[in-house]
Every structure is written in C-alpha cells, then in structure tokens.
Length: 330
Image 1 (cartoon, rainbow, N blue to C red):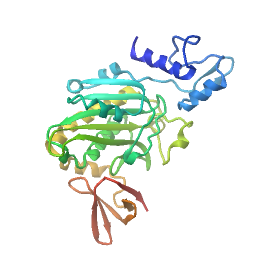
Image 2 (tube, rainbow, N blue to C red):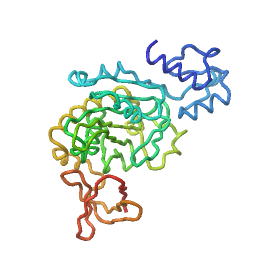
Image 3 (cartoon, rainbow, N blue to C red):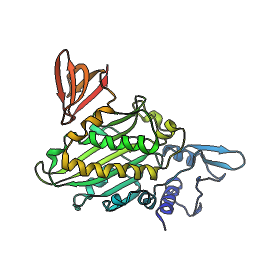
Image 4 (cartoon, rainbow, N blue to C red):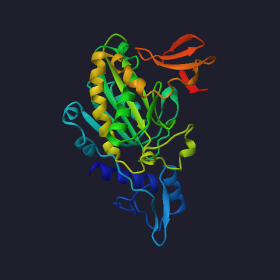
C-alpha cells in the first residue's frame, strides 16, 4: 500500500474510529456520502477541513486535498540535492516534525533526513509558542543537518534559513512582497506566512546536529483561523491559486541545502546584505523586549555582521541576540 493510501486510511480512522463499514478508498476530493452525521462533520472541522453540503450528495470537502508524497518531492529535487538527502519521511500525525527529528538524531549522525507531517498535535514555534497545525493544509517540514565545526558558528543561522525560504517563495512561486522579520518570521503584507524554528544538539566547540524546522501557511481553513494569535496570510490566498505542497517542499529543499553548505564554509557574514534586502522593519520605530521587564525603544537599523538586531535609541546603538527577545513596531 502506498503512502497516500495509508494516509487516506488513517484519515478515515481518525474520523470514524474504524473503516470496517466505511470506504476502503476515497477519491481525490474526499467526497463523503449522505450517511455522515454531525459527529463526523464536527471531527472534520476539528481537523481544520472545510466541509460543504452538496444537494442530493451529502457532504464533501470544499477544496481537494493534495497529500504529501515523498516520491513527488524527490522528483522535483535538483539532481545534486537528491544526492544529499538521505531520506524523506512523511507522517500522518506526530507531535511535531522538529521533535521527531530531535529524537532521530540521538541515534543517527548523518545529514539530510527530512521529516514532514500532514498534521502536528503539538506544533511549536520560537519561545515555545503554539504553531497551529491543521490537517493537510500547510507545510510542516524539518531537516537534520550535521555541522562538523560546532554550534559556535550558528549565530544568525535562522536568518540565513529565512533567506532560502523567501527566495523559494519569490523565485519559484512569483510571490511578490515577501519580507523577513528578525529573527525567524516570514511576512507578506505585514502578516505572517511562515516561520522557522532552529534546534541544536551537540557541543559548542565540537560537531553538532541541527534541526531546521520550517512552517508555511499554504491553505488555512477559517475553521482554525481564530486559534492563530497574530495577523496571518496563506500562500494560496496571496497567489490567488492553489499550489502544490510537494512542489513547495522540493523548492525549499533545493534552496536550503546549498545554503547550508555555504553557511558551514562562510558563516553568516556572506548572507547579511541579502537578508537586509528583505528586512521588514528597517527604519521603523520598534520596541524590543528582552527578558521580563527590559524594554528598549528606538529605530531598527538592520543587523550586525553576526546577525544581531541593531536598534538606535536616541543615539545609543544597542545589539540584541535572538534568545528570549521579542520585537514589535511601536
């Protein structure tokens, strides 16, 4: 049984509890028959799926679902990237792709393992914030990469990763107006369209493994929009068309893997100018909160050569490392 059939089967189990009396197969639109009851519709809504009533036919999903498929992702990878990806692992539902990768690297020391999921039960972003993760609508992708030179070179690392994502969205999907918010948000029209979570395992001065977590809003259902605690936008709405999540995953990997190789060789310095071209807050009045009660107000002046946020407060230029820091416009 292929991965897509396995996931379809898991979806039916999720909805109905078992599939003995339902379908062994459902079509590309996940059309449902008239026997659907309120409990089934409620479960679908909880999963973040848009369900509509079709006169004389019962219910069906408003939009078709394209399931993640490792073969389709591989087929869209550049040849040199295929050779650097060790495995593409697609899950139906896991706690989070980053958590899965952190468990993976405890016993594996190679680069190139990719984990994706249709649904995250405990998706998380920076500073432990919840990442709302509805079913089969967005992209939840994590990549394991091994650095021989140690964690001390990883200052500014999330900023470089954001460049790869922004370049993929702009270059491969013609998304205009993409901006980056220090240290890890991808914005469009001042709304969040994606984010990055970097987690490191290893010694500061020795080899380390890094988990690069990337989440992109592709198609966010209005069923879950109230759970998102900040302005947001999704890729399909921004482009006015539906895009393939498999193609998006491949596009990001095609941009990301070469960047990782360059970063290990050159560090962040070579990426600074490119990041500043995407800087969403350049010249804006901002407030930076560092810790519980340390607030600093000033004008954003880009980033340092190592990726620190620079803010000018009445002639005093202060630098902030990412850590437990939050940034917002005044």
